[in-house]
Image 1 (cartoon, rainbow, N blue to C red):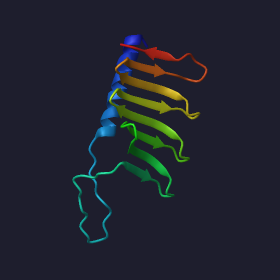
Image 2: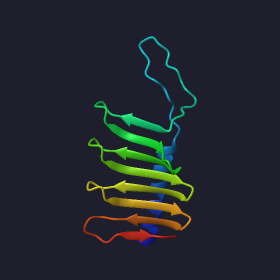
Image 3: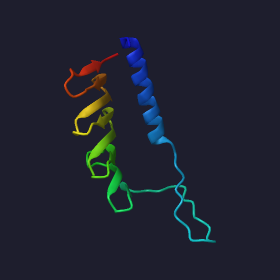
Length: 129
C-alpha cells in the first residue's frame, strides 16, 4: 500500500470515528410496561457515565477543570482504550492497544496536524500533511 493510499484510509477512518462519536442519540429513559417514556430534549451535566451490568464505568464524557472536554471508552476491566479530547488548542484521538500503548494517535492543533501509527516491535510512522 503506498503512502497516499494509507493517508486516505486514515483520514477516512478518522472522519468515520468522529461522525460516529458525535451522532445525536435520543435520550429515552427506561419505561415500565404500559408507561410512556419521557423524551428529554436537553441533558445538562458536567460528567456523563455509561456503566455495564456490574456497575463498571465503560464510557466517561466530562469537562475537565482546564476547559477540555474528554470522551473515554474503557474495556471490561476499566482500562481506557479510546480517548477523544477537544480544547481551545485543537483536538485529538488516541486508540490504545492491549498494553495501553497508543496504536493510533491523531492530533489537530495550532502546531499542526499529525497521525501517528504504532505497533509493538515496529518503528512508529508519523504522517503530516
